[in-house]
Length: 269
Image (cartoon, rainbow, N blue to C red; front, side, top):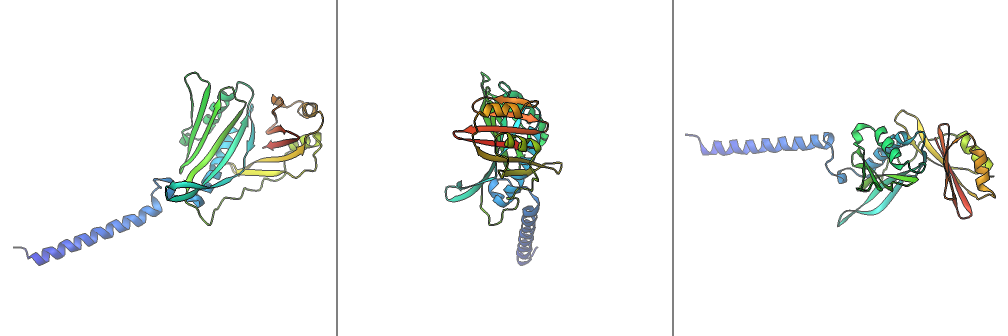
């Protein structure tokens, strides 16, 4: 007959061993398993991932028939992780100018240009008048956009969702973009703003290069349309109306947007 005291100590030993196994698995999973919810990866994890996805997106979006403007990195506070816990959202926009009637074609081309793992999807309503775009860049980084099928300006927004804040945020600074392209200098000279210092937004491309947008705001000159017709001669003109001019000069896209008495000039390469 088994001694009850020996059996009790055997059970105690088994429980202790099982606790040790569970503890070891927990430690291993922290370093090896993927997070199952966004709040398990704070904003310090999210920003480099969002910056990387922005480089992938702008590379997929770049091409004939599209002019691009890369927005800056935004860190937006006071979102809610839970009713009692606040956090921060990292976000960045890519604005795409297209010819009239080309919105669907442009979004389809961008979806096709993204890696298969992004599972990019383009949806529309029954009448085909509203378009919706979504892609999953992984690690809870989403790319979303909505537009009318007749739109000539498309905005794709990268977002991290609400994350816990962090004192250290690697990847918050954009890479060095170097000197602006010749097409940018040409349009500035044509509009009388050749000495203006540009704002620069930049991200690393997947191939190791840098994609950037250089922008300046100028006083709107007299005969803006005439000046733009001259400087864009020979370029692929995508749009030329009172709201915006957009064209491609080789591998550089140029966008000029009047705003009251001012005009914003952006070149992206």
